[in-house]
Picture 1 (tube, one colour):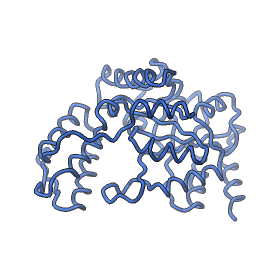
Picture 2 (picture 1 turned 90 degrees about the vertical axis):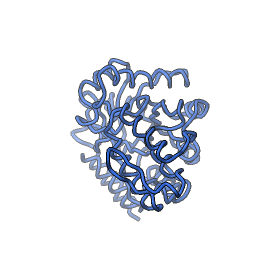
Picture 3 (picture 1 turned 45 degrees about the horizontal axis):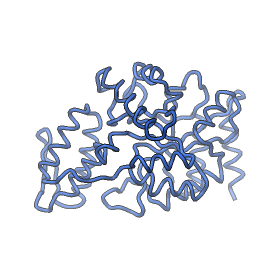
Picture 4 (picture 1 turned 135 degrees about the vertical axis):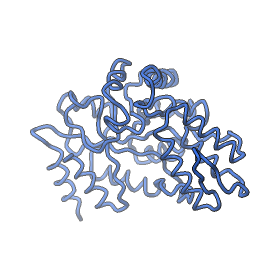
Length: 317
């Protein structure tokens, strides 16, 4: 009923002075059903709905093709790309399978430490807290007590500690997660990440594989040499898996000027990426200016009209 309105609104917003702008949407984790311990995760049926709305109201393109068309000023109106960050197993088990079912593609930005350790730092915090026995009622970090007395307090403590650790250096994060495992009396055995065979299968099926550093650090918190090695290592490992160039990079956390700077943009270019993506909200119109700091968007609405309208409105930013 409102299809014509969304199309007209999108086409009006996406064209600025003869240049069509590109929307790139971001996803992270998708759960089969509602998970009380992961209330912020999008659920499978919601994700499938959003894919169908993207396909219905927009022109969904693979990221490499969209970048190529942007370079030629030949991007169609209402163009959208789908990206997925981090590389957890639901990227294969749920997201990849859902994309295939509806005949869409996405770019998966993978932090390669997860291939070696089975998880990244955020999942290790989750695993320690929710695997702790009921007799563990609290933990202490930097002199602050975090309660584990009940399910809700574990959820709250998990998210508070995740926010605390997010801005830490890799070294401090490692100390934190090791401390949590010790205090919670939990062994480091969880494996919830993609493996090399799955990445290869996704690549062979037409998905684009991108790099997301090795250990998912905030690049601006690390030394120059550490940041450079983190970026390059992820590219090298993934290229060894898919036997093809990895041309696209996504900055961890991804806030321009906060999580990465011009120094890191220069690293990404020097290492040989074709483009790099941030998490700041916006749309792409100027490839020359924004090639290594492309903005993305995360529509969260659960109804078709609100989802499509919000994404259409993002072309204006």
